[in-house]
Structure formats: C-alpha cells, structure tokens
Image (cartoon, rainbow, N blue to C red; front, side, top):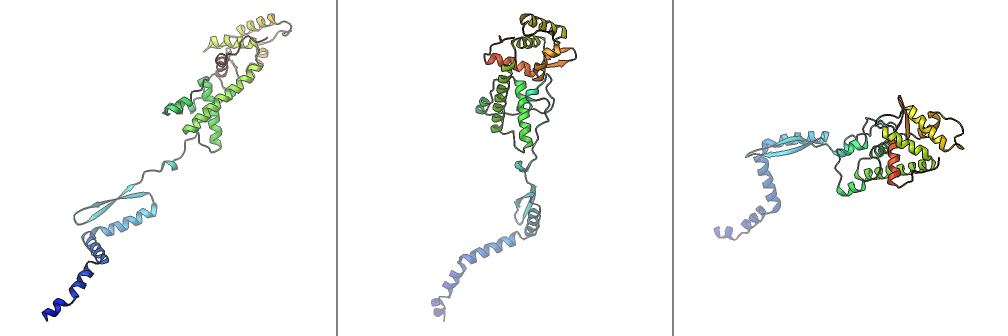
Length: 267
C-alpha cells in the first residue's frame, strides 16, 4: 500500500497545483486583504469622494497591520486661472499728453517681468519710452478687447515693435506737414519743461516768424490760430498758464534727432 502511494502521481499533481500562477496570486491577495483589512473600507469611501468632486488627490500611509489614506487638495491648474485684463487707457498713442495715466501700463508690467537676453534684445526699440508705453497700452487694449493675450514673450516683442513702427509712421506724416518755425517753437517749449510757455513768449515767437515771412503771414495771428495744427496733432497742449509741449511733442523732437531730420524747414 505504501509502495502504491509512493508511486502515485498525486503528490506531483498537488505540487503543480500549488505552484500555479493564479494560485500564487490569489494567495498573495488574500494575505494582503487579511493583513490590511482595517484600511480597505476607508480607501473605498475616500475614492468615492475623490472621484465625485475631482478636486482632491490622495496619499497612502502603510503601517504594520493597516494602511490609511489622506486626501490633499490638488494645485490649481494655471491655465484655468482668470486672466488679468490690461488697464483702461487715456489719451494714448497719437493723443498722448503731458500727464501719463496712472492706470496699469505695459511698462508697469515690465517692471516685474524678467525676459531672456534674446527677448530683451528684441525689445530694444529706439523711441521715447513714455510715448512707447502709451502706444503699447493702446495695442494691448485692442488685443484684450478681441480676447487675445498680450503678456507672452512673443506678444510683448510684437507689440513693442508694432508700437515703434506706428510711431515712426505717425511722425513721418507730421514731419511732412510741420513748418520750420513750428519746430523751433517746440524746441523753445521743451526748454520750459516742466512749466508751460507763457502766452506773451508765444506771441513774440509768432511776430518774429511773421517778420521773416511777411508774404505768407499777411495778417496778425493769435496764439491759438498759429498753434491750431500743433494742437490738433497733440504736439502742444493748452494749459492754464500758456502752452506746453506734450509727451508726444518731446518724442517728436527726439525722433527728429535720432533719424537725422533737418530742423531747418521752410516757414
């Protein structure tokens, strides 16, 4: 009998059965379930809460005979954060005045912006910084109204270069229309900054101009009449004490020098 049991393949089949992969896996799962049985209920409840609101993550803690779960708030997705709008502009671009608006400007945003060296090089535009900032605000507002972003490196570079080109085109037009005596008056007004040029000083300049070109200026002109074009293109502004050069006017004088424009025009 013992000899029959020894030769019977029962033991071999039992050994093969115990070593089967599905048996090993099942046994391992049962051991884990038994060892950590106190934590599974907590995990199941936590998973239901997490998937219900989608706002939490989880962290598992293992102990000697149980594991627990902690829920943690997920970090906010930066792509879902509300975008900050560009501040409202006042008298920007071609209507820039002597007082810069206190609202948010591209230059104020630049103060906290650290561009790469290459981007910084592309941002170098040879224009009057205050007027450049006003025109940039104007362009950024147009983009914002259209739902387009204006704060990436690419947008900043394009906005600045477009602003510089716009100023160049506007000043080229102004230069084709301005008279030499008006350029001289702008230079005199610039010397009065931050004060305005008194009306009597403006009248004196007008009389000197009339004496040089009597055939053109055939009748006396008031300061408002003589300065009508300069006022219309906001190179000059009327003040309580006289007339003053605007930011745009100062930028125009700078543009003349940078671009080697002659100041000795007719009239």
